[in-house]
Structure formats: structure tokens, C-alpha cells
Amino acid sequence: MHIPDGFIDAPTSLTAGAVSAGGLTVCLRRSAEVLEEKQAPLAGLVAAFIFAVQMLNFPVAAGTSGHLLGGVLAAVLVGPYLGALCVSVVVVVQALLFADGGLSALGLNVLNMALIGAFAGYGVFVLARRLLPATRNGIAAASGVAALVSVVLASVAFTLEYAAGGTGGASLGRVAGAMVGVHLLIGIGEALITALTVSTVLAVRPDLVHGAVGRLAAPASSGDRVPAAVAGG
Amino acid sequence: MPRSPQKTRMRLGLFIGLGLAVALALAFFVGPSASSQPDGLNRVAIDEGFADQQTAHATEDSPLAGYGVEGVDDDRTSTGLAGVIGVAVTFAVVGGGVLGLRQIARRRSPSGAGPQHGPQHGSEPA
Image (cartoon, rainbow over all chains, first blue to last red):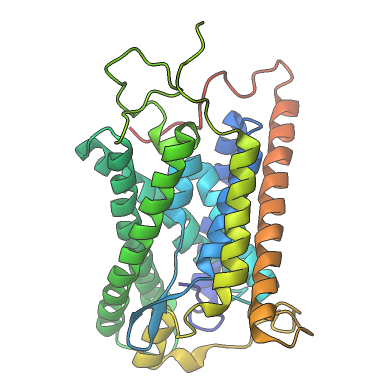
């Protein structure tokens, strides 16, 4: 969902840039307050993994591909503030080094993929987690649901940005319908990748999953395992 | 406290190492096989007629532009190498950034009121 230069006009791009800068500042501040040393390599890994998987475009329809955005994956693993920072760095590295995503569109892309992805996505995750069992599978499923919704929300965000300052004069209704439609499909891919990855981390180091800390039900026998997790989910 | 009879959890270093290995392998070996079809947004732009509004990218002359390494002739190797570089750079920037952020935070609260004990990762929405 990388917006290239030229699709969205300057005032809208600048506004998005200001919003993103503000949002990232908040993320930096909130993250700084609670960082533990082990989170440096963990956050690095989250970002590096998302960069790698974002390269892996998968077909979703005739002549169309999709790729992971990663906002929910990052937020569930390292929390929304640090998660948004991880995805932002991915987006910036892509724009600067790989010419993927316009430089003038950086604010838009950070807003859509990192901020909306991580925060709106995490909000959905928290809701879904309440409705699902407090097990590893429940957490993984909640991540998947949130991931799907986050991708659709990001596509809605683009549609709104296009409404505000889009170039080319395309029909808003058609753009909206097409964007949401294709991103429902892409969201399914995002959901599967996110749930699978979260599930894997939960299996080996559940303590590294921010979205699971303190949320997994204790086993019937007194908890020896760190942290307490239901065997078999 | 009695030692747990369960197997001890994977060391952090091993976890990070394995994770990075997976990321690098995905970028190098699977990256070149990724679909080259336009992604959802670009597809919509093409179908709805605003794709030609795209303007030139400021860093399109970067040696890594388009996920290829300038000077490497084989397409697959070029893409794979670009991916590996991207994974490494991203890891370094975020890892280093978090360490730096932590330093700044600690310097700002010399009383040692930095990270709390226990696995806190920032407040969550209610």
C-alpha cells in the first residue's frame, strides 16, 4: 500500500506528514519511558522481519498482488508505540533506499501503515482478545482478526486522503469500492501471516509477545513455566 | 525457588538469531519469487485512471532502487541481495535506535526512574 509521489497533492501530503511526525513523537516518548534492554534486539527483529515479509508480494486477484503491512504484528509483539516505530522505520528505509513509496508521500505512508496499522489494529486486537479464549490460539486468532481489519482501515484511510487531495480525477465511489475490495483479500493474507507468526513466537517465547503478557490463563497445576500458559492452547 | 521440571525457555540470543536468519532467508530466497503484479493500490490506480499521475522518485537513482543491487547482473541474486541489505539496515537502525532511546530516557531521569521492574511494555488501551 505504498503511495507513490504524485497521487496525493502537496497540502494533503504535508498535513499527513505533520500528523505522522506528531504521532511518532508520542510513540518515541511513550516507548522511552518503559524500554528494557532486551527490547532493542527484539524491536530490531520485528522491524527486520516485517521488511523481509513486505517484499513477498502474493497474488490476490487477476493482475493484482498484496503484501503484509505489519502494523498489528508489530503492535502485538512489542506494543503499539514501539510497533508503530518499527513499521515507520521499515517505511522510511523503503522510501529512501529502495525508492518504494514516494518521499513526498512518506507522511501518508507512515500514517496509513505504521500509525493506523499499529494503533487502530491494536485496538481491534484488544477487543477481539476479550471475545476469544485466553489461550495461545485465542491470542493468535485475535491478532489475525485485527490484522485483517487494520488493512481494510488503511485502505479506507487512503480513500479519504484521495478524497481530500487525490490527483487524476478518479471517481471516489469507485476508488473506495475497489480499494476496500482488494484490501479485504490482502487482509486475509495479512491475517494468516500475522496469526502464524504470533503463534510461533507464543510457542517458543510467549513472554516476548506484548499482547499476551498477563493474558494467558494459568495452568491447573501451580505455574512453574514462565510465564503461565495453557499447554496446547 | 525449586527449579521447574519443564524445559527452560529458548535463550533470547538464540531466538533473535533464528528470527534474523528466517528474515534474511525469506528476503534472499523467496524475495525474488515474489509476485511482480502491481499491488492493490497500484491496481486501483491503473483501473481508475490515476496511475499516470505518478511522478519520478527522488531517489530512483539509488543503487538499491527497485529492490535490486546495481551492478549485480543476475536478477534473482540482485533482488535477494537488496533484500538482505534492507533486512540488515532495518535491524541495525531499529536496534540501535531503541538503545539510543533508552540512553536518552535514562539520562533524563537520573534518579533511576527508568524502566519499571517486570515485563511492562507501555500502557495498553483499557
